[in-house]
Length: 123
Length: 396
Image (cartoon, rainbow over all chains, first blue to last red; front, side, top):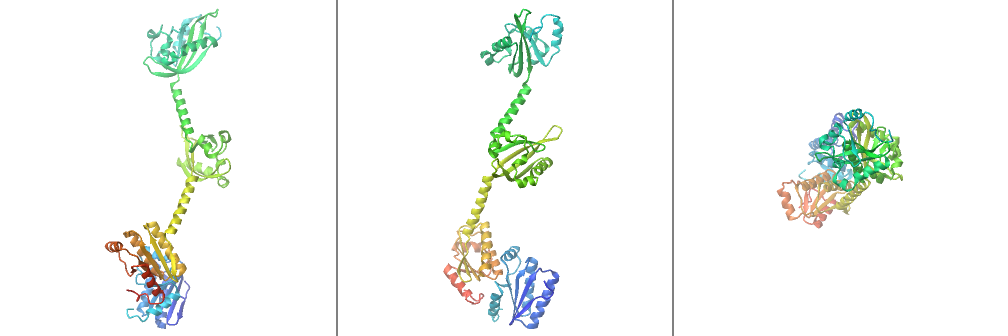
């Protein structure tokens, strides 16, 4: 992970592109940067693109779930996009609880879903 | 003293003492009709008869009935007379009726004028050597009877010391083409350069056995896939004196295994087809019994297709599956969850009444999985989902 976490603003939404390897320090950086940016921009939705991560194991999965929870607490919707087939199988086999995490195939679809779900009463 | 004859003159008692001191051989005198005239401790030890029991009886008491019937005794005596000596080997009978393998030499005794007075018969018990001979012969024949395997002997340096019909059949070399040659002549060039033969023998010497598989070369240059076992041969002192090498041609089995694996792959491919029926909509028609191998293949293939086609909805049609057990149901749900993590919605279709009962009775948690009675209904739902209606609101 580079020093600066790449966060792109797209209208009312943010796109966070995670890349390379995640360790304890980079995770902290990411959490600080993402929560700060969501609060600062008053974003309604955040896409977390994981297609650039070299490894997604149970540690990374927990990090993702945590990140999603933080974003929700800030009043924004979060969606994880770009999970690869092998990673998806591994997470299911490991039994990592990801039940409440919203997903999309790619950033485009994720954006469409964020837009559609924003005004729903139950969310 | 005449040629081949035994002196009868001179001091006979000296000769008798000499003969009495021989205990490993039987040395007796027969008269011209084959009747026993002398006896000594060596003969008693060999046959079990004492002098009083045997002197005066015909020598034929030592022969097997069938040999007497075949006239072997007369033949031997005649040969001795004609050739001056007759040497034979064969079974003889002891006093107690047991048999032993004897080497017998009969020499005629003549007077100075050349007239026959009898014979000297010298016999020795060679039963033990005979047993060893028979055992060695049996081993040799046993090895020769093995034609599916190559069973050969190498010396400690790896030079071929014995060859077998099985080896000839396997490799095409005749015995004279390989004896004394180094075993590396059967290895491929790469393996020879890599010193594989020496390494295998080294392992066999250290671990008392080497087993391996690999390519070997026939006389005509063609290769075959062989399984090889090397065992060291040691002398009484434990010194390595060579190796027994057993090899077998597994080419056919290897090819069959590969063919089988290929066919299994093809069948799996056929049995888990994924069809794109609409833009961003995939259908997975499941037919037949799902085993774990097939189910794993199914998950893998489906997720790959989702990634490739960026499919938003997957319809799993299980109307062709006769029975669903816990493992299969769990596996299907895992597939659904993995697809969801990738951002794809799954729709189940074609659930039979008994399957529905089974799934609920098994206590399997279906979560948010949607199900439709028919593939047609499922497809309608899928199209609505793709058309942009929110996936959480489209439900019934």
